[in-house]
Length: 323
Image 1 (cartoon, rainbow, N blue to C red):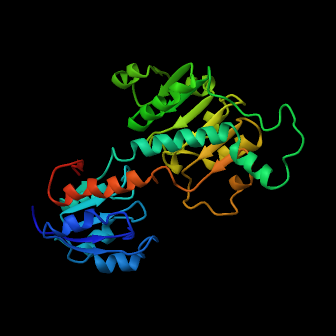
Image 2 (cartoon, rainbow, N blue to C red):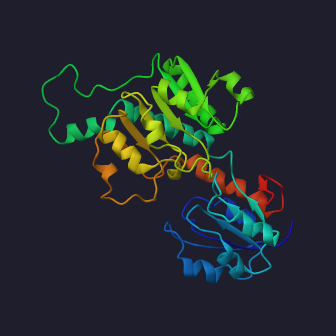
Image 3 (tube, rainbow, N blue to C red):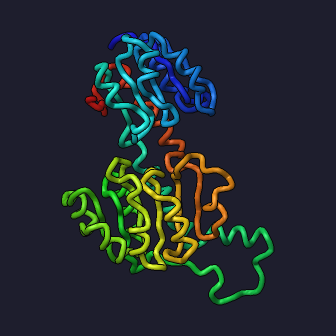
């Protein structure tokens, strides 16, 4: 274990980390923490990282050449409290021999739960129903009023069958889903056999799925993969859910698909940009449930984040990305 002066940026000191940070201090770590729920200002970040040995960050902090230059040659490890690390320049870390720690398993359960919640809220039109009840729309009973789409005997398509995709299918099974399909960079037989799920091309998944759940990572190959080409193949009764990254969806194409009735509805936990402007057209649609990034927001998962990052600073090789 080596002494580390750690700058903890973009992380609140209120409750999360209250147990982990003292443990880091006991390991000869001198800790400086950004004490706010708001992202750390760029100028503050650049000033505080000078001379540090370890950097603890969130998705809101862009860790690039400018930050690494400001930190100087003493920086040995960066640990991000996130599953993804597209906000960190791997190329710049590699140049400097800096290791990257991340937390791939912490969010699996929380994201899977929120994904199912968003799917149900969207397909059963819960947000619409709440709005109608609050605003006087709840009148006499009508046989088809607020009717949505159920999961029983449905086909669910998963785009990206990783840990989260598999966890989503496990939670959807008890609803009586008839068939699971998945599209990925290649077959995932070990994972798919347990579900079971059938590997198909993305086009076939779009044609046959009643629900499409996007769980893939954001890469150059998946950037904008959910666009008009996908939506035009989907059923007009299909529900589209994205809890991965906003960048995998062409939002203008999604908006047009929702307005024109190409698909029935969409549920979004992630957007591009984030936060989505309050006057964005998607917010005006009744058939789009767009929420702020909340999939990771369970108390258990946030507490686990900090505990998971602690061994990385102590020098333990736990989920280290060899840059």
